[in-house]
Amino acid sequence: MKTDDLISMLATGANHESAGSAWRRLMLGIGLGMIGSTFLMVKAIPVNPALGAVIQLLEFWEKLGFAASIAAISLLLVIRLSQPGVRVGKALPVLMSPILAIWILAGIAFAGAEPGHRAALFFGNTWKVCPILIAMLATPVFATTLWGMRELAPTRLRLAGAAAGMFSGAVGAVVYCFHCPELDAPFIALWYLLGMLIPAVTGALVGPRLLRW
Amino acid sequence: MRRLSAMPDDVEDLVQESLLAIHNKRHTYNRTQPLGAWVHAIAKYKLVDFLRGRGIRESFNDSLEDIGELFAYSNVEAAEARRDIMKLLDQLPEKHRMPIIYTKLEGLSVEEAADKSGMSESAIKVGVHRGLKKLSAMVSGK
Image (cartoon, rainbow over all chains, first blue to last red; front, side, top):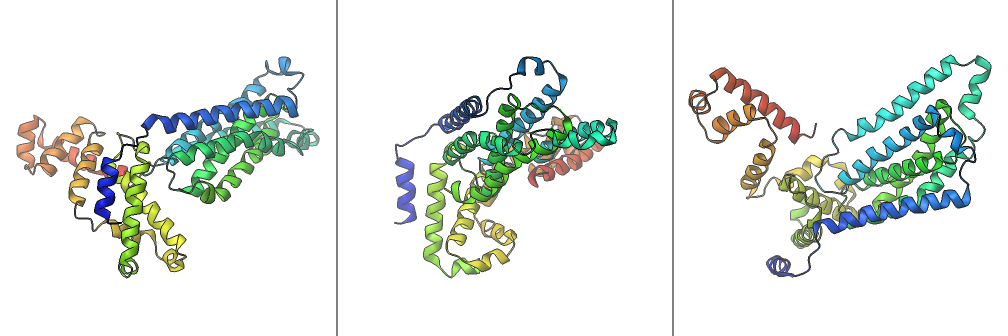
């Protein structure tokens, strides 16, 4: 087909997608994914029975704040990376700040602890399952975020996939907070981060294939 | 450039592919963003996708600068640049924007710009200098 014909065909075409609908679909997808993650947590690994008491502790809110701020920053990255030519800007260094903050808290806790007690701060009782469970809780959001992004136009697919993965991992961690009995900052700094990195790395690997348009 | 001009049919395909992509993805354009950057990013994406699909391995040995040059030959570049620059200028504070518009876009002398804007000559010079610095930071994405 001649390019001029294509142009006139496109220019006269009636099909029209409003700017808002693709974004609404992404947000709807993310919302459904979050419901899915919560449902999975309640069904597969129940809510922490001591949640009522734990929720009054500062450490719980540090943990939740860490996961939630990573989720918010990665969502911003997902949105920016879904539009062609929109710069990522300072979002990547900003993403490092909650990680840095939790590591500082971890350092303080580590330095203040008795030498014999330090390993317990890092390993808690649940380190073996924590990253896996976070990654599992991330899967519904991971799938729906990638689905929503396909309707938009990511051009840096590897980075976009990684951002979607990091976002879903952080949402998974937020949901996991309501199950997890661990409260020590060194534990969060290591295993929660690792749990978020599993979907992030997966996203970077599958992004170029799944997000291609 | 040389690679692509050796296959005119592919170039036509690629142009059509990019036009179609721009049409189908027009809902991702955000009004506050320079249009040139948006179109450029889509065209570049389609070019990289095309080269990858063809398995033209040597394309990855060239830097993306080469690909950037491809788009620089557009004959409507000046008009596109003007539209984008106005959008970026809007983001500058008044005291940087006016000196740049007067001296760089309208071609007035520093003296005339000072008269017209009521700013001092040194304020005009400083405004141009700082403003251009900010603009180049915006364009290079820092």
